[in-house]
Image 1 (cartoon, rainbow over the protein chains, first blue to last red):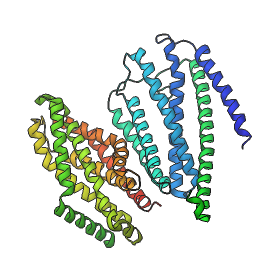
Image 2 (cartoon, each protein chain N blue to C red):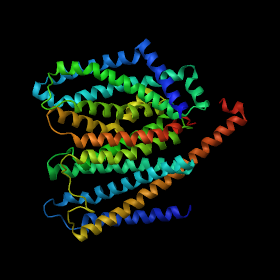
Image 3 (spheres, rainbow over the protein chains, first blue to last red):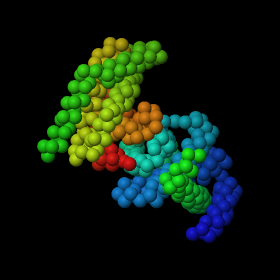
Image 4 (cartoon, each protein chain N blue to C red):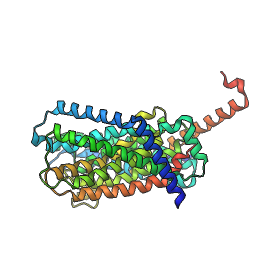
Amino acid sequence: MKKLFPILGVLTAILLIYALYQALVVAPTERTMGDVQRIFYYHVPSAWTAFILFFINFGASVFYLIKRNPAADIVALVTAEVGVVFCTVVLITGPIWARPVWGIWWTWDMRLTSTLVLWLIYVSYLFLRRFSSSGETPLLAAALAVLGALCVPFVYFSIWFFRTQHPQPVMGGGGSIDPRMLHVLLINWLAFSCFAFLVCWSRYRLEKLQREVDHAHALESLMDPRGSAR
Amino acid sequence: MSAPTGITRVTLLKDLRLEWRSKDAINSMLFFSLLVVVVFSFSFDPSAEESRQIAGGLVWVAFLFAAVVALNQTWAREIRNQVLDAYRVSPAPANSLFIAKTLGNFIFVSVLEALMTPLFIMFYRLRALGPAWPLLLVAALGTWALVVNGTFFAAMSLRTRSREIMLPLLLFPISIPALLAMVQATTSILNGEGARFWIVLLATYDLVFTTVCLLLFETVLNAE
């Protein structure tokens, strides 16, 4: 497993560079929007990656509630953290694109608003993890993750009732996309997913080590009361 | 079946009696929402037509903030004298306690709404353009949505550092769809339009979140 990590790291780096090249050079320039449209190759893959990570967070939280498996708790923590980062990327790249194309930075449209609310929910999840005492954190966080995930369809439906301004979804929407653009989009998505996986993996190892260290410290101070007084 | 409902009844009556004698929650909520009404009125200075458009938002934001005041107190009195720990070691079902607390908060916030609504109507010169009775349904469903999640998250934030800050941080993001539905339903009804979509959405939200809170409350109460 440890040998696999650097190999995957190198592969991901190559893939990211290739995807960058594809997005900036190979992909055809969009007719009306021009080069600003290329941000789409970062915006959409980040969004998909964030949604997948939040979905894994939900699955891991449910698993933790049922089985009380500490590894599932670490997975939930890690995916929420990395998911929030990707979701932030979505929320930052969106306005950068919207300003020249729509003429406004932000609008309270369905997809923008639901992404923002999703971001708020998972930031509050990270707050809870931060503020609760360590022994209870996994259970409380898992309960909040389940409630937060259940909230998502309500957010979507309630905001759906407003008129939507965002371009139709690439998949399953009415819009059509140049096959070359779709190709570049999918390469970027693959690169971003690999990158997210890599970050999650290294964060997982870090968190696991941290817990082992904490555990060892606790044991040590139990064994040697004078040592802990330092 | 009779034992759980008995525990719910006893806990609820105890909370109501405590509140009746101290009037802590209701007084602070009333004064707080009065402040919100006055501050909003100064900040926006709306005409009668404008206030009809923004009243739904004002009313529910005032009630949401005021409810947080009551929700923060709801478990605090069980911490003193280790009442909650005693409850946890007793064989009484956790959900009976949860239902009692939720019903208690529901009653407090409903009383607050009943007292504050005339004031809102007076200060903002509100007049509905259509039948106003569906507002009662919206108020009941909306209050339940706030209170059921609020009671749950108050129990959760009890376990955290700086618990009084934690409750709004947890409650507000999850409540956004419910809040949107309440505000939109209230505004539509005041403007004489139908609000069926929002009421159905609110009812579904209540149903789903009540079920999940009941499923998870025992875990949260006993989290160690």
